[in-house]
Image (cartoon, rainbow, N blue to C red; front, side):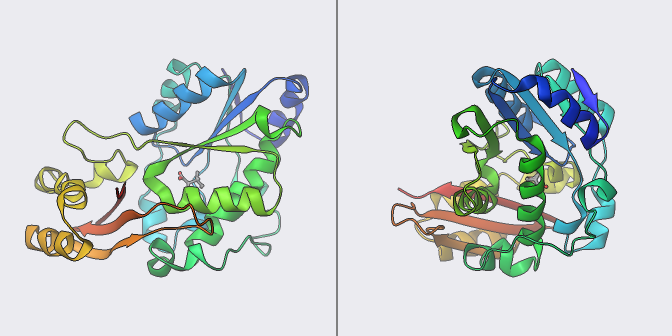
Length: 266
Ligand code: PAF
């Protein structure tokens, strides 16, 4: 595994990769089993794999949240190594934002609801950094040979990235991978490590209520009674395609920790 601590180092290495297939997994680090599943799938389906680790400041609407985001580089590299990843890119903020974030990618429909409504500017930051990372990662022009792996846990993010790739004719295939869950159903997330023992015990009720309630209003009542503070809980079909299926989306707080999840509705 080669660790590139600058974009220039990766750019030099990628010259020899032209003609192979590339599987790319962008992350903000603090990797868990959900990320490991993305890495394993990329490994299985592509000739070469690239993981990026970058805590993107422009997608944090709350500076305290950015500060508290766990940085666990050595553990992350160990996970990448055991997943058989070929290349790891660790760009710096100065390198990725030479424009000091004066240029942005903005979407004006899907990004305004759910997490977009409660976290102003969040998806501008996500789309901008993913656009930059895709330009940097790119080794060729064939979408079948450049595959981007992202999790369905962040389904709104996945929908927006898919839309951006289509809107700007980016030569990438976006692969959405199923949410990886703990045995009690809680979706794997970097934020789970912030839960107290009592909050961790309550947390699986979130997905249970999404799955078992006949409607969003009932799920809300159940979760509020259990001690969750609901940010949003909505049934929606996201995206511009008429084929977009309905899902139930939630963001809810347990104490200071904000958890998100979603499930497909039949
Ligand atoms: O899902 C994440 O970890 C981040 O939003 C991403 C896609 C790596 C962009 O910073």
